[in-house]
Length: 99
Image 1: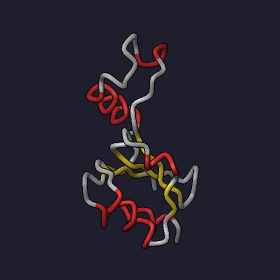
Image 2: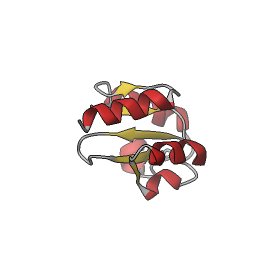
Image 3: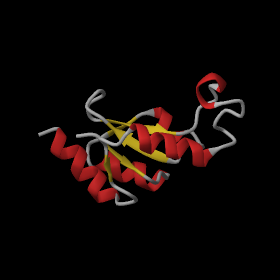
Image 4: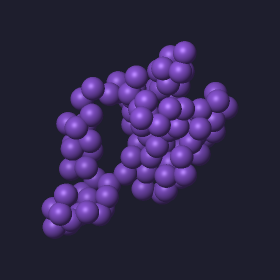
């Protein structure tokens, strides 16, 4: 199962880790506003944040355009389960994948 969470904080990351799920260091980057999980990296959650690749994202890059970044992420990840801000659903979805 692929899923993402529309929030990120130290408390949320701690709760995820307390449930036996690993957190990539990229989740702690201050601009990582969302978290995601996919079977590509089993049992490892990644931070989602805008990049600065001007060729991919336009002349501003995405550090200055979070709305565009989020719109692009949502469009490109339609097959991911959107857990909104429900941390428990995010954890349950990841755990269901590892069974």
